[in-house]
Image (cartoon, rainbow, N blue to C red; front, side, top):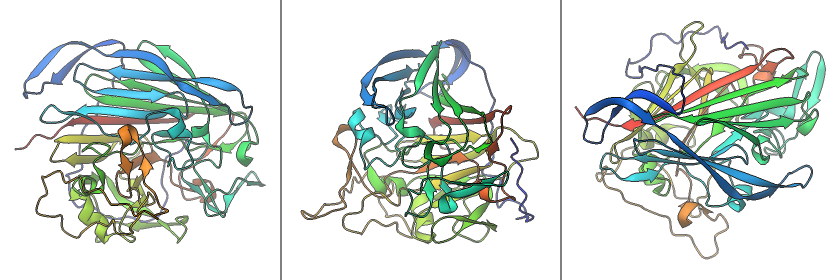
Length: 437
């Protein structure tokens, strides 16, 4: 599938080379030879092993047939002290535990302790594999080969979001395990949510010993149909339960010199905006809170167009640092865009969660400033893992993707998958420790 961008607009040279990084693709098996950084800063090269265990995570009913199905949970652990958990329901990442600079291991993604949480109406796609088309389809309508298709409008009653009312995240995927690679598969029938074609989709997960979580999406269809899959993990490198104050203290850089312009409903207009001189210029590292304070609406929910060379494959997308814990996250993908979302629509009972232009003086202190919820509040917090209360701005998402509503914009990268072709999308989340000079 094409990934070229024909905006007809150049934004000039990047503001800084700070967003440069490196990635070396590697195959994997249960045992591999790698160089690992130990907690004391030394290096060692030897055969390391990643372990994978499988157990249950309750049961769900198929949303179309009501058939009761067991949910499987897959747990990877490597010798660097990192672990990842994924469940077959929604092909969801439920946990990513990463050591910090002082050795403390914290879970850095938001989620729930049980299957009931993931099936709840207030689940904002925590960790989910999203499809058939992630993000928005304007007007819930598109045309392929002269045929107009109407899909479910589950966003403001006017547009479609994340595949409709019953997207890929609402199904229990079948699983196949080979070594430490888990492949989850889902068959989406012709006409579901209004889409043409029966689609067979799969996502593979694998944890490496250098703390890379490798995710690969694939899909084929028997009719032309739009496809845009992504993972919707909500990250907070301070720990999933530390809230908005710690999110504001993250330092972020994005390898993007443009965004797709959107209207008041967050639907792309088809135009591109250069980030230079705007709140969207994250090409040099910036504290997330102060950057958010300058953005319209005091938060991000925007598709950033990745700066990449012609025919370039895997590309560095973003680097996020949480100075207090020392944790870092780097993201790489072969997709043309990434949606930076700062949890703007999560609960804000007192309507007073907002970033400041300058972070407070106690920058390096964990404050755990949890909002007090009034007795009569209706915008209640989301109850997450370990009894955590999740509020607005309590996490950020980096959803690698094609551009939103691409099926309705001829100048966006092609999103229509045709019979005989294969949709492919790879994303790598690499966790590490910040090393001060």
